[in-house]
Length: 108
Image (cartoon, rainbow, N blue to C red):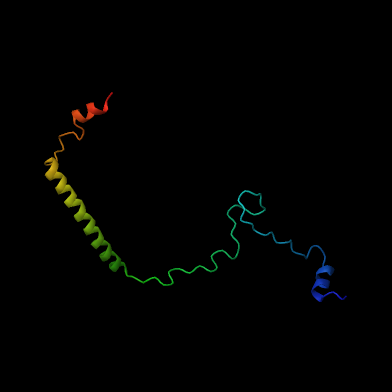
């Protein structure tokens, strides 16, 4: 059987012209590898597609839509505070938040 020309070229080359065999990267974190920890091969992020089907929005459109959500959340907080004030009375900063009755109940 005759060898292919590529094999003959490779066999006739001296050791200085041959490249070192390429080390295959394995995704095994527990085994010792010849590559550094932060190694990424050339296929890393090759097929990455960023926001292919996502809508394109302007900055001010995003601000307007976010402010609508923020206003709704603020309304919920204000209504909850008004309900709490109706039940407990007005909030006074001078009154400590933990009453002595509640404190005695939790002490041994």
